[in-house]
Image 1 (cartoon, rainbow, N blue to C red):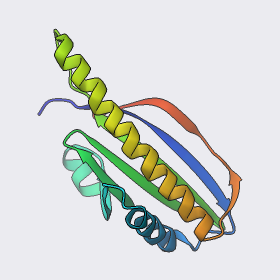
Image 2 (cartoon, rainbow, N blue to C red):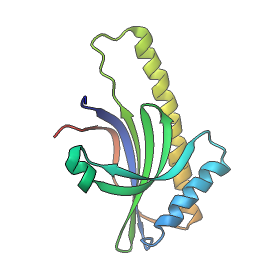
Image 3 (cartoon, one colour):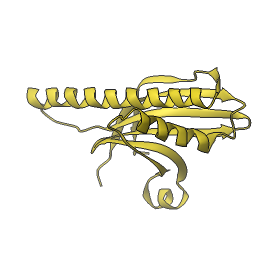
Amino acid sequence: MANTKFTGRSDSYIFEDAGGKRDQLEQAILNELQAKQYPLKATIQTLKGGKGLMGAVFAAKEQCVVVDVDSEAKIAISNTSVGSYLYVETYLLIQEKIFSTMAFDAAIGNVFKQQKRNAFYTAAKQATESAFGQLGLKLANSGYKSTQMSITDQD
């Protein structure tokens, strides 16, 4: 199997006195996406991280709101309780395709795909932030914001 590289971006949030609102937040995000009639197919899924046989057995599992953007991109909205705090992160993950020579048509096609992905990410992020307000969550810190990240399945 070929090695895969993902790039994307993420935004994170930390809320005080919200540690027990994890499931409520996931449902509020789904409701918000439906109410705004965004063309996003969002579901609650358990995502598993890890690779190889050890990854299959001992992989970290996390329940997330997942939006399938296209065959090469997903948005994952995860949240984790840490004591009385709730940590939320939105991720846009895009599988990179490596081309030895890239024609202009392929490059401009990738630009248009990225524009669609950014629009979906912005809509999912807005719905997530709207859900924060619905639940009355108190922002403690806007956390870490990544404009570009790279993840590979290599050791």
